[in-house]
Length: 258
Image (tube, rainbow, N blue to C red):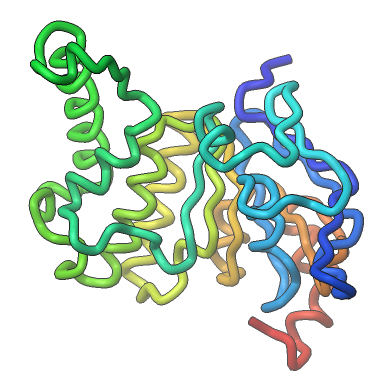
C-alpha cells in the first residue's frame, strides 16, 4: 500500500488545565485523499491541526505520518518530514515580497555549507538556482506573476490568502493541512481556491486535511468529511452521507453555526 501522505490520528486528547479541548479524536487520511474537517466554531478543528503539525503537544494519543510516529515532535521537524500547513490569518511576513515569502517556504530544501555559502559558488549557487526555479513554478501555478515582487502587506487580502497557500505548497509537502483557506474570500476568490485545490489533488497527488465552513465547497470537493463538535467526533463519511445526517443538520441549524 502507498503510504505517501497517509496520516493516522489515534485517540487524540488535548487539555488546557481542566478544560478538555479534544476528546479521543481518531481519524485517518489516505494517500491522495482530500478529507474535509467540519464543525461549528469552537469544535476543536484547528486544535487537531495544531496537534498534527506540532504547535500543540497532545495530552494523550498518537499521530503517525507515513509509518513514523510524529507525536510531540517540534514543528520544524514535522515540516521537514513532508507536512505543511496554512493558517487562518495567513501567517505571512508582511514586510517581504511574495517571492521572498515563497523562498521562506523552500527553507527545508536549502543545503547549507559555511564555506560555499560565504563565496556563493559551487553547490551553494546550484542549490539557490534550483530553489528559485521551484518558487517560479509555484508562482506560475497560483497565477501570482504580477505580484512576484510586491510587498505582501500591499497586495489585496484575497491574494494574501493565495500566497499563504502557495508558501505551504512551496515546501513540496506530501500532506497539506488547510486551515479555513476560504475565510474572508468573496465568491470569485472561493472559485479560484477550489480550482487550485482540485489541481493540487489531481496533478500533484498531495493528501489534504481541509478545515472548512463553506458546506457547498465541501460537498463539491471533498472525498470524505469528518465532523466534530465540542472537541468530540460526531460522524464521518462521504459528503452526501454526512451532510444529510440528522446530527450534522442539527449542529448547523442551531445557534452554533460557524
